[in-house]
Image (cartoon, rainbow over all chains, first blue to last red; front, top):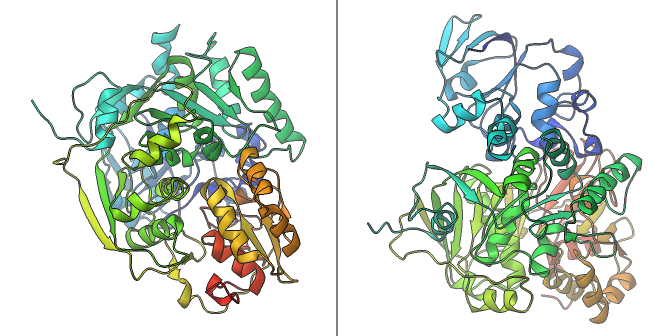
Length: 164
Length: 425
């Protein structure tokens, strides 16, 4: 089972897809190109400062706005390991699951974590450990159907049996 | 066993071969049609080809509408549009729309009778929820979802809980569907209907023209909703009858269906609404806006680029002049609307006032082209989002309103209502 360890980058509520990847870059589809502009309009110095494995933390309604899959794609390609938020906008949630970007819903984690905290995400045990603060937060478990989707490696792999 | 269901639940049940569905349940549903545009479809096509799929489930039910960056704004966008066009030709898609026929997808597809009551529609565009105005279950999904649906004709969905909104009373002059939905989002917040279905009812909705119903369902996503829906009445049936490309069957909910919440509002005191930066929920009535100078006014988009929107704008602009410091950009949402506006003399009124008329495109709504803002600039727009950098520079601002307010503001040089223009009170 996937174990994720990294440093937190904390932002507020309603982080929208325009902030995650501005529309001026939607004339591209290559993940590495999109990743260069990840969160550019929210925090201009974000990309140069992050390390592979770092964890993005948001508040309520993370990923609201447009349906652009470029948003989870650029987060995944940027080297961020996962997104933790109090809640996710529904299309972003689908897209992340479909492309295999780990997203974790936890109101308490979102509330307590501060930028710079060292985190360990234990998906199998259903918890986030905050090594900096010595705290643990419970993760809202994925529904059974989604676990099936995730374990088959995303939507395209999931439907493969049916079509090929 | 009889399980009372809302219209949303009935349509979902009917598309997954079940007698009934319950909120929270996951279903695999048959889609009546699916759509993508020049920004989202290229990613779907990549996935489609990576899966080595040979054909789409039905070439008459996969719609590709290159509306976001067309007429092509730059070389990279042109490549994406070409990829979509080539795919459409290769797979013999009946409904690919070239420049000259293309319009903004959520105005175009209803106009062409391609989305119909009782249907289950998914689109790789968040504003797909617009078609709920016809009594369809329509929801936005991502590119991978679209790829899967293009192959299988199916989609996985979690059955949402539903909220009912009842609007009663008589709206004041210049109060439109846009104001009702901005008011609603202002009341419940941008995640007030997260994962849920929004159902709009009441005598105000009954009296609302189709154009305004589209506007309301269009912005359901701005409250986080999965879908917005209005039970089809004679008006909706008449609208569809004259254009439907296939037979359709209307669905309505059970009167004893249960809802997570029911809001009942009297609209009598509601004024035209303005959403301040940077959230659509940040609304104020027009009388409380204060002095907000603007550089640009945009009238158009999948939210407000239809005939009644252009008529309202023309009513305010006729015989007036756009403020010398303001650029007024008017975007008829489809070619048919463009032609009709020309025939009715609306375009002449716009040109005489000093507006520029754009070909149908999403363009400036998402900061794509045809009216991108510079640093520090401010726009009023009839579009749907006012997030940071939405229309251009991250330090620009967007205020959302109905078309009459956007037109009046263009004349005034600051945000104001049509009541401030002589003879329009």
